[in-house]
Image (tube, rainbow, N blue to C red; front, side):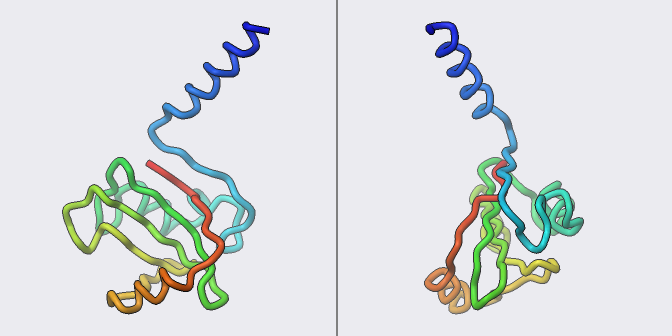
Length: 117
């Protein structure tokens, strides 16, 4: 029994020590794995977009006004324009004003963590 418990603990610790975590979820933007299946998103998360992606960054999906919104949080970025980004499923940036962002935050639903660095 102790061996099984030990192996279980080692397994959990090993999984939590990975640098990047992808959390699988049901369809997001019409695909099973948006990180790999949406080329524009893979490009951004790989650091090939306008912003450098730092440790602690995360990607969430939400429902808002009947559509999926992807929210990239990059808190370690020193550029104010790169700390919190919003996209639709085609990669179009959303919510360019603080008022739009606050409205979204107040009314978003169905939060799902999709990725964490």
